[in-house]
Amino acid sequence: MADTRPPRPDSALTSTIRFDVPHSARIWNYWMGGKDNYAVDRAAGDAFAELFPDIVTVAKQTRQFLIRVVRFLAGEAGVRQFLDIGTGLPTMQNTHEVAQQVAPESRIVYVDNDPLVLAHARALLHNTTPEGVTTYVEANFHDPELIISDARNVLNFRQPIAVMFLSVLGHVADVEEMHSIVARMMAAVPSGSYLALSDTTKTSAAHTEALAKYAETGAIPYRQSSVEQIRQCFEGLEMVDPGLVPINQWRPDTVEIGKIKPFKINYGAVARKP
View 1 (tube, rainbow, N blue to C red):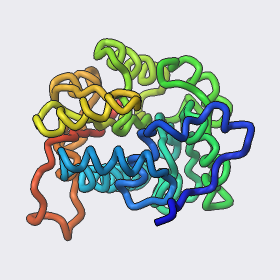
View 2: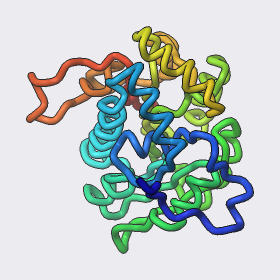
View 3: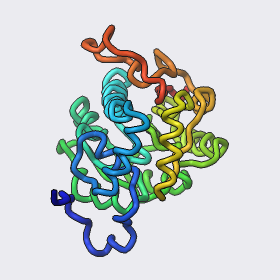
View 4: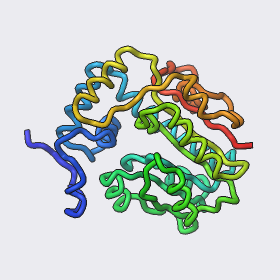
């Protein structure tokens, strides 16, 4: 059967994008049922799923977590500014779509330094309301000061901002650096801002094995954290109920209550800066 491929980015980017090595954003897109992936990504995704079949459910639960978190922040919490760091490939119900559906005037800044993600962002991340703003910043989350500097061109740092790190900080090899990145970002935003964060935990031997095999493909490795290491990212902040929990147990929709089992691979929480 012929390989069905998404359109390649423009020629200016092809020199920096590898099409022969699995790419985490494209694999994640494949697990979520998207079309922005290649045969090498699908092969890596299938190999991962053979070792850890629940990964497809985890990927979809991660997006559902994002939707519930942004809906809470734009609604109950009244946040109108969002800084989504490590965006990944646009799929369905992206941050700006959810936020602007609740509050049309919401301003969203996506942050990524991956040329593939940026190419898709330019093509697909468009404002959904006349009142709101949707844009992106080309920056690496290893450099919070650059993110903050560029985001100031769009966001008002005297008003609350929701800082989002959803399933991306495992790309930071060192736990202390992970904590430093989060702390520096939260130090820059004002009182009343929020941190929304989720990440992979060391709770499944099958998942750990799958990640090790994944790294052997040449893709960028992904580090697991302990639940306590994730909890430390929220030091000095006020946790929103229900606290740090498996992501599919964070404020599940009414139709889900009583029907879901906890997926302890990914934990997440939302917390307010006092």
